[in-house]
Length: 633
Ligand code: TSX
Ligand code: MN
Image 1: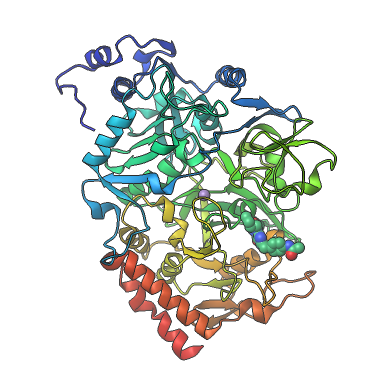
Image 2: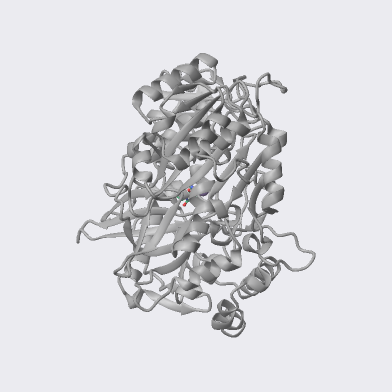
């Protein structure tokens, strides 16, 4: 947006002119860095809040805001736990809205690839900067009338760390403030660290100015018909309107740490990825290796990040469960940080069997959104049936009485927990190491009921980029999509791309340099089924057996792999299956020729349709995977 203040005007004049008589109920505007003052002035002028509240990240602030939310009926204290709260949203605001998420640039092809004529692109949505600005100006004009604008200084990554980045989020939702305090590092120290650095400008509004035009449901003002999540990568700005839910409103996460950060990473030579980060220590040698894994949603990324190994000899610890910022250091080692400060995980399916470490992470200082409540002030969701008192009364996420076995869900399928990462029993002691952890392997994966083996290793970095670009996964009925279909989700980044996906793949290829220690890359599939639809692999804690094979490959063990047309497969018996009973190895690792021919052709067609001339052709040329399958399978 053009700043409509004349260039020559001094900051303080702009501030006086634009802030007008907006009272500052907390904080000192004049202590803020000038560039922050200017950013604020512009948005105060547009959004017209009743008051300004400059956050400092203190404990007292949390108390004050929490108290206010309880008073208003937004949060209910869960008396079974300490400092845990339940929030129920307007049922019209329960998920990310991809169809209303936009990236705005002047040049369309900076944002989206040249799709084949007649094809609707699915790798991001573009709007011209001017058009997006007009929409933003009209939607946000007066959008905070009668409400307080909170100013949230935050860091993605440890404050002041060399790989970290700063953001400032403006929001009229104190629920969003409370969640931002868990998911990012909110602190007044940010103003000091900012110095000459740039910051990502984040603007969020529920889009429900007072007096309200729309009936407010569950004390959750929102504007679902006019949701808009707009990104301006050129000026590192995000504007989100109409929704208070998760990734729509906690702008540090998907909007900043993936979409805007992927553009910053392109410009600065690093990678911002939708990946978990975990450390595996070999208890015999004491040696620890770190892996990053990229899976589409609903594949259990959070579960894998926190697994309890079922074979002795490994200690697993989590660094991050959703986002990794990766950069090669001056020794050529790829290092990863988790830019987040907390976990925002899906709850249904989570229990003491599937993910005990997650369950133990949210017994304190946590927010549960859209779950069911038990009469003793506990929480409940699908998958917790064996972990609550059978006779206890339950209130579902809509606030109605509910019983196990009744039709419909107790909790919304996209209900979430928000908890500090530090509370996870297996959080890695180095999870906040500013220089990051060294990465030995990158793992891609998807939910693939047929054809795709438990694990394979790519031939090279370049081949790994191809494998990543071909990631697909069976969709659940979650989010906006319905029915079960295998959907493409290249690099698990489809909803989170900040720029042209073809250019992004080229950026990945450009990461490879002779003086760099390129990590090995793999593809895993925990979800292959037999002809009766029964899972061939037990998954969960037993996945450590696959990670063990991956790490032995990284250590250079040549004896445990065999070459196949799609990559290296484990040699029969080379994965430790001790104590697992009957595992149908041949079925788990078979490569049905016609399945793979169809799959490669379909993937190639998809990428030609969607990425067209922007696709780095070298990937096909060097690999000729289809030819290998044709000739060798
Ligand atoms: O998260 C999962 N992981 C990764 C865990 C570290 N899930 C849940 C997916 C939804 C988020 C899995 N589901 C995994 C898995 O590895 N595997 C499966 C499939 C499966 C489900 C149940 C069983 C086995 C496999 N249970 C029995 O057979 C008893
Ligand atoms: Mn995610």
